[in-house]
Structures are given as C-alpha cells and as structure tokens.
Image (cartoon, rainbow, N blue to C red; front, side):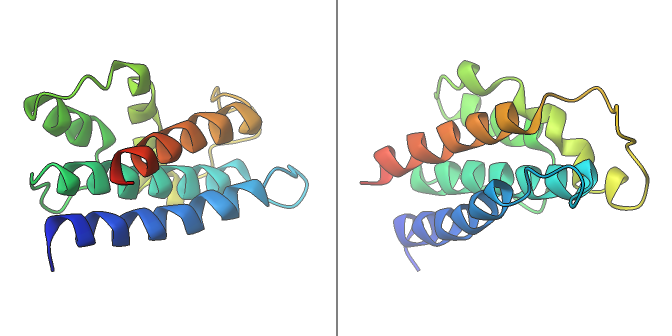
Length: 127
C-alpha cells in the first residue's frame, strides 16, 4: 500500500471517530472519558495520516505529542494544533479510570470543533 493510500485509510477511520464525537455531546448519556477517548482516537489517526502522507513513519504510539513532534521533524508547522496532546490521557489512563464530571478539559463542543478542524486540514492536504 502506498503512503498516500495508507494516509487516506487512516483518515477514513478518523472520520468515523469524529462522526461518533458529534453524537456524544449529551453529557447525560456519554461520560467525558468516552467522548475523550474518541476525540483522542480521531486525532491520533489523523496525525498518523498526515505523517504517512509525508512519507514519514510513526511506529506504535498513542502519544499525540510524539506524533506532533514527528510532524515538526518532517518540517511541518503544526502549532495551531499544539493543544491536542492534552487528549493523550484518554488513550489509556482514563479508559480505566474516572475523569469526573469536572475533569478540567474543554467543553465537548470546543473539542469537537478542534478535532474537526484537524480532520478538515488533512482532507485538504490529501485532496
């Protein structure tokens, strides 16, 4: 599979997580940990798509900061997404722990908007 095909495949998977996020805005139904997990997954897959599109490699990681560092090393200015590594904690830690109702993370709508902005940015790069 070519790097570009791999990037498109990763982005398609990320879009599914993004779509799920849109349905998880109701705080009475979805715990923030569940929402956060899908936000983290959408960002992770999108960053991996971006890296693949540039011909880079990312190994096995859920660390969004490491993925952004990889992009920086590939010469990409990704400073507008510099707050996304905060979601890394949802990849593992909060899957098995309770973040609580007041976990200090941004409102869901704000997270959804930022993740959608990243996905849209990579869609434009790949088109």
